[in-house]
Length: 64
Image: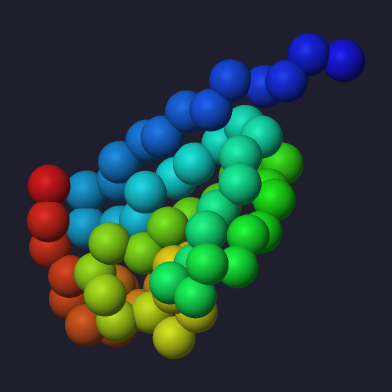
């Protein structure tokens, strides 16, 4: 089965939506392999960084 191409979509005031097969590396260098979709935090307030936990809505984050 062929790998899905990785795509990244921006959402006004929300996270980066990443889809496809990719490996995510956190700040400690740990790798987490993903297949499907992941929402990446843009606002900096997520308790699950680098993943989004919806904090942007609670803090009123507004960014194009």
